[in-house]
Image (cartoon, rainbow, N blue to C red):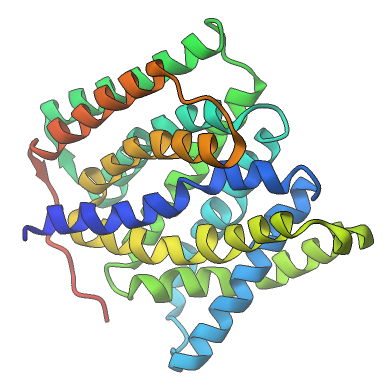
Length: 296
């Protein structure tokens, strides 16, 4: 199996996990404060990561890697969850899913600058067409206008892309599981402090589905999903594998329909088919990138 194909398949495992983040956040935010969700999920993931690193006796990363971990924390651990959780108090997860469709293009642009990848013109065109499709869908759903809700999700895209790119860079020299684990552990002082600050005593009476949603966000969306995603980016390259994210909005639409009862319409299915076609075309386009480095 070619490295790019293997990378895309592994990366899709992460996308499948991430695709539940919006609808599950929508469930949790019905009872829990958005800021408690953001910092609490990071704290839960950080504690799990700490146990994992202790179990495998992982050595401390070198000082040279610390700026990369800081960017991952800023983008993926805190920034992205903050913006999407607040967004879920302003609009439906199905609409948010489509706005996040621009994430592959943002990731590709940042990856091209950071890794000096050189996507072909055909690749850029297929990416722009796919992104244009999801933005057109968003405009159709929003009566031709972008809102504050859309702006929050745009900011979330930038944060996620920063975390993805820096995580992929570190995953070229460290194992992906080690990368996300140390990023979460380094974030623990902040996440524990602010989760304790935003916790309310009546949360203990919240229904089981609320706490299961919170646990999913902490363990899977914040931790396990990155095992697959960073490994896929490392193997297949950022520009190529990031296009798998174009499938995430429509996986989320399906999850929103099942978990929240939000409608899955013919329009959704048509746009899903169109976006999938751009992923298939983009996969065939030439991308010049450095050969992947085996992790330590």
